[in-house]
Length: 280
Length: 280
Image (cartoon, rainbow over all chains, first blue to last red; front, side, top):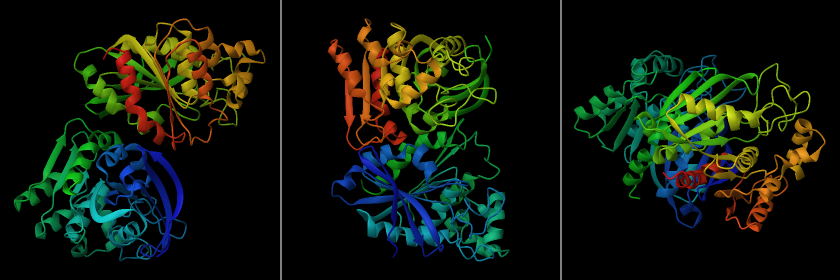
């Protein structure tokens, strides 16, 4: 395993916000991630980890600087891990659109050219990154996961496909049925090809229908979000989950949009939700 | 008075974060500012205003997106107003350095060429902007003021020079004696000329020595700040104020740096400090 190299660190809420670079075997590129270690982790305790998956165009920095999450991670004693949203670099395939290629990995393992060589964000986020985090930082193997928009899709499908690995999942304005909405259809056709059976493997609404391992789910959606309901149809997922008797918490928030101003407004309740699922 | 034009608005913590553009008679340019109206202001109550002055290179957006201040403004029921740090535009004089010209107005009224035509940030922040805010938004004429670095200098000297106008003043890592430190010397020589008597009019440490109207003062400084103590010597100001019997709260924060990660960590205590001075 390649040791991660520290890029920067900042003290925050008596914990440490740190950025690292490492060579990823999954993506075959250098990858950057950020980790927030709460004060408890600096005082000799191992803490559980809450993974955040960001949306289109983001790096690890958007959530780190804009969400205000570290305040509540420090309060509850949970580490935050914030990966990038795709492999990057001159050798990595890209697209002129903001919704495909670099910054838009969609948390899938691409099977199609020119994407297959590096676009393996599902493998990276689900396997390589937790293994690295649990080897190098003062954390336990208890995990939870959340995300925004494309990252909400990532969090939901990863939690549903890996029963027992995550204590809970939550999402802000998630893409829940990418097989049936434009962002997902464009990305899935490029990364996974024309066979829509392959798409269903990464489609939360399809996955929840067959999921057997129930876990706590929380979704917040602003009703003034420009992408709602064209790209974002959380009710479809909620209906599918509730149809099986799952108790999904779904909050439609009047007047809120797709921005980090929305995320910051409700980040406390999401972190509390995960903290409770993690027995903090 | 020119009506401000709404650029964007985002719901946040049940209040509104709004950005406006207007033509400033002080700077003779278009100026952008942001205002956060807490929920109380949207429910028919007039609320007091807390002015934030940003540091070098910032616009209105750094504090708005990174400090997490709106959470506490909403809690206490105070509006936040966030001006830009200088006039801007092709017709406005500039410098290649990040510490002079656009993004570096230093909250003074320049008397020297080529700056005098537009660099009137003292007048803008102290007079024109509050007049506009109090005419157009659901606020009272109770004000308080705070800032970071160059903006900490701005907040302190403005509060000291305008007795009775501000309920309190606070600062993160402020430049307190610009006449005697490199950033201030470079900017004051350019904007105010060689006569250091003119500099003293904008130097908080000089001003506090002769100030008669006591007001609550809070300063936070990280001891891992790269600019401390070369550019930032808060103890000099604190000593001068305490020497006159003023009760300044000064917190030297171990391990914290100059970034917004530092500001976010202590923003709650600053807003609480102003809220109490404003009788909230």
